[in-house]
Length: 228
Image (cartoon, rainbow, N blue to C red):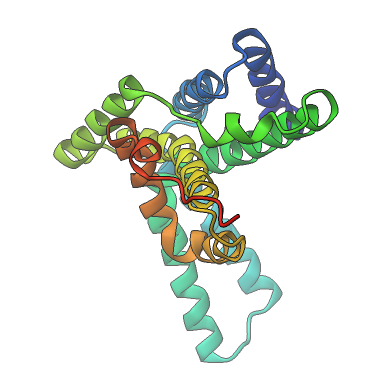
């Protein structure tokens, strides 16, 4: 039931938006708003994530000590470091959790759209995916939220920013795909890109997605002529 409510219900709602608008761009904008509502709901339901999260870690630590009271000192020190790291992560828990769910939801939605195109409009998904553009209003709001987060350092603002980073990461990914196609580059570049995306390039790709709202990189990059 939890999976149904947290993943498949948003997928169904966004599929309805996509069906009504016939626009991936507007659907991802709706996903961004849904994600912000998810962060707000997290705070309304659970309150301060630090107050909710840290007691769970303390309980886990006590149970672990009961199950394995004796162990190498190095292992105990490593466990303590991990627990402290998880406690420090607590203020950003709403944004991380909602952002992760949103990424799964968007991947499911895009996969469904791709399969639909294969059945009813072969080849129709690629241009729709490559031309994905979330627009300047949402980008302006994202930058304003970024500035407010830097100015005030309020965790709910930062969590909202984490959620908005997800659709812009998707836009950055579509931009990379569009460039590879336009420049007729080898698909090996996409393989390398995805290998480096999570450990190194995620922030860069997200930033490209935001900047693309004004820069419109797709129109600036010249297509490479066909070798034939």
